[in-house]
Length: 143
Image 1 (tube, one colour):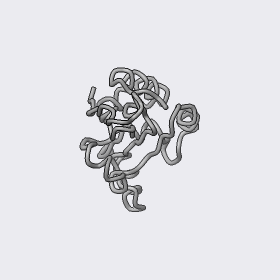
Image 2 (image 1 turned 90 degrees about the horizontal axis):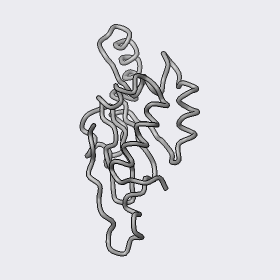
Image 3 (image 1 turned 45 degrees about the vertical axis):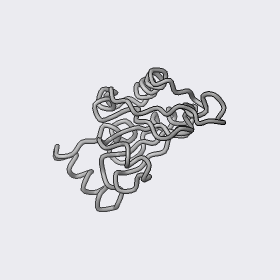
Image 4 (image 1 turned 45 degrees about the horizontal axis):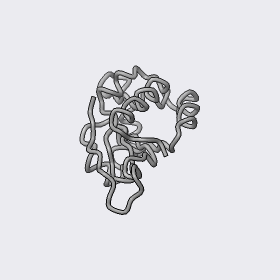
């Protein structure tokens, strides 16, 4: 399992604030432009492209209802981006896509990489469970 670098609280921070997850960010291994979306959709059907995070969050065209329910039940917001529109802070640390990172008081921490997401086998619930375990393993807490 991939793990990121946790940062200790800065002087003057409340104890643990640097390890508190403020939000999660998922980055798809696909471009977010209309051309990128269509290219991915066609390539996936031809067996030439695959994104495990897409399998968790989307059906053949739309966002999955079970994903929306799962996302809405998480203790922090979960935002998704494509590789071409991800925030710079995420781009700097999440080299292998797809990925899920935690935005914490101390910085960005990679929680799940491509293999971790693949092991979720398209299940939003399994991904949420793995995120909970990884957060504990990394000493991160939900806000």
